[in-house]
Image 1: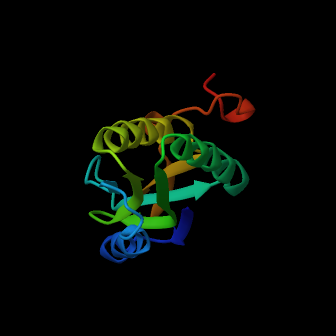
Image 2: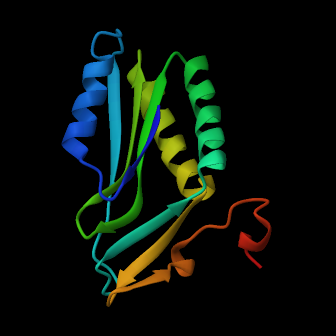
Image 3: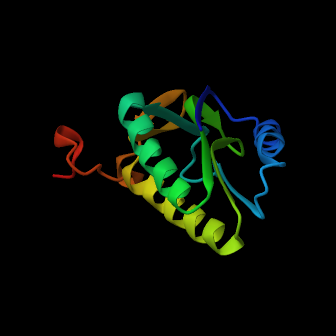
Amino acid sequence: MLNIYTGALKVPHILKEWYKEENSSNYGAYISFVGTVRSEDGIDGLSFDLYEPILYSWFHDWEEKAIKLGAKIKMAHSLGDVMLHESSYIAAVFSPKRRVALELIDEFVEDFKANAPIWKYDLKDNKRIYAKDRSTAISGSGLLAKG
């Protein structure tokens, strides 16, 4: 399950809903990762653009990988502005065994950072500035690839 929300994520609500959805599914492990906008370089927050068709395809591949391991993966991400100390990203893995969940969440979060079609902008002095120095090129992205 992949959900996209406008603005900051309501972390307690989302995690509670995911837990309620899966608490009787006989998973022995539920591991979540919450990404929070931190203060750096004088920013007021971050803003996000994403390309949904590729994002949903990328996420579907991860769902298939999780299913093969007997696990389930969920993700929520923000679209638009997220201010300091608010959250823009949540991922969770539900698995019968903790080792599977621990390894899968690590691989998923790292791959997300490297390959998900999401573009980050700094919010600074009422301006939206592309965060090129903290962005990762997506393989095969043409004009968006590192040059």
